[in-house]
Image 1 (cartoon, rainbow, N blue to C red):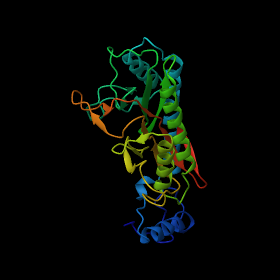
Image 2: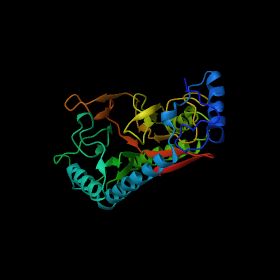
Image 3: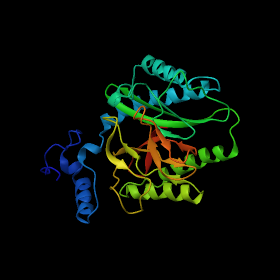
Length: 291
């Protein structure tokens, strides 16, 4: 239940404006939609202007890091070298790698190759080979603000089946982005992603999804890509969340490596791909903050 404010009280968003001049109509619209039975965002999921500005600055580092990886990644290098690149550039630019020591995670970035779905741990013993596909998932903290995105990289001459998986997964993210509209629902985006993946013969991981982000590494809402239009949480301006479907070439089933309790693999051993963008819901659509 949202705390009720008087019309002349200062708005909860920190704007210092009167509630009636700021978010009163916004809150009333959310309340009407909640009364129809839809899940709606709590106020802490809605970022104010100062928070968005801080998150933008964090995202600049995140983008620069992934650009740097793309310029230097190659066959014959270890994933530990990628981790070092990420750590060195992030800290040089004043940031902190968000994954480092997060819930015990030992590295600054996730590097997931071929049939690794996500959370691959960098290692000096894992060497990139011609024909590999790899997801590099970088996350940054700057002045307490978080950003998060990932990209796929094709190493050398990648076969057509893997290349198509990478391309279709990127298309899924773009279609999901186009479906993000204020006062729509997360399911609108989820179904757009899901339908395109399945139309191309792929499956979308069910157990792991996107998430809110900005003031913490992982915030509400949890974001599914196996959802239906008109369902899931209401989307409103000021929300920030990731679109990051994990698309499998084969079956949908996955498992977690018991040896490290982090790395997720496809059950059937077939490749998986993931692109991740961080989006801000605006008054007329969505803005990509980190990609």
